[in-house]
Image (cartoon, rainbow, N blue to C red; front, side, top):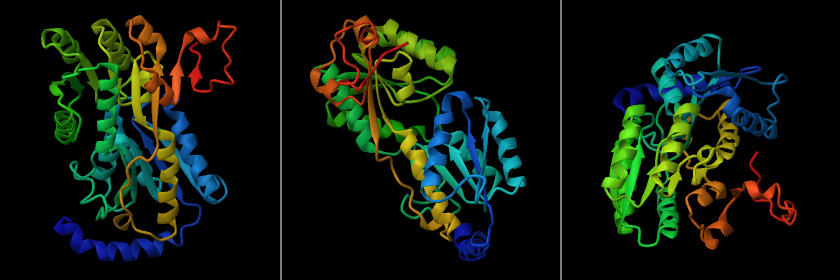
Length: 343
């Protein structure tokens, strides 16, 4: 725990608990750096979680949602507005929104959702004892990385050289180390390609063939629609199997994704709100990892690559994208709920 927090925390906790217990109709600020149209289901999941716990919007609680619409530079002003309007708690989706909130506010409780490594980012002191005004739900899970690598090994028998494409995200070093160490245990050599700009992404994909990569792991995302579309197009042109860390990639044409269930994360975020409004302090609420994951496979992309998805992977899939199902009179959608016909 930071010395400053150690000195201030007891007094903060006593004062804050007393105030929170007496708040009527608390105002919850919900902040997302992305597009509202693309991510509104996360807000719906959060509200559903609140409702299940007895917090009814308009009756005993208000949720004020704000969206940066991919303009992360706007986050500081959004946080300032919410704090100034009397927000009781801030729920921040992703790393940029969470960092903006912590820079602008050191007292209002912050519930982070979907941050890769809150410890290495300095957002919390430890996962079990956050130690300040921030807690929530991380994406940190070495098991998830291991599972993605195993899926690639099933897609590419004998896989021994893997390209990993990442942005220069906060906490990048820890993420790369986890990928590298997991890959080494499986006998896979990794080629780390940092691509913070559109030009760098183009150059990263251009290197793949020369560096004899057999598959690709896109470890960053979900990015904006334009950047995401470009990465999917470059991946398709590479003719290599690619696994993504976010479901939206597979939905929009990527081959396969294995990702945390964000709807579940935001429903669980409501539980933190409930506990804090009932007197708990964020410093005492452990940061929790994802519990639910989804495997999404795009069979349309697999066909375009001439790739056969092993039956073992298809059997595990939570969602399969397949355009042939719409026109196939023999296909029974009711009997195959995993398959989502593409439109």
